Image 1: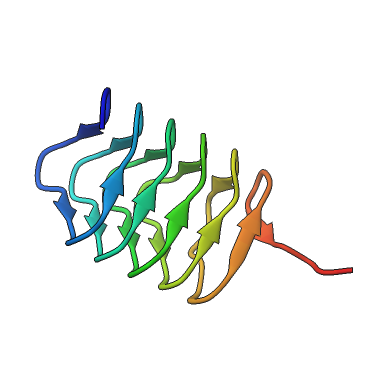
Image 2 (image 1 turned 120 degrees about the vertical axis):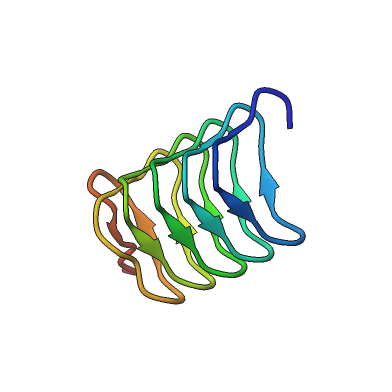
Length: 99
């Protein structure tokens, strides 16, 4: 998309989207069906599992692994690995708790 940046040695899987103004830095791996939303930024060597979403304006620290079917909330700051199937929000990103 417009203004998106995908840097050297990054891999983008089939049916994945790097949306407007998002950046995917060096050596990142996006599995199939990943959506990096507008304005989100992945530092170097980040791995994102299949069918995961990185929300608008989120930031992911270098070397982090995000599992499959994960939702990273808008504006979240990911500083720790996220297991499969989680929804995380906030700064630092933490599991969304239900009332």
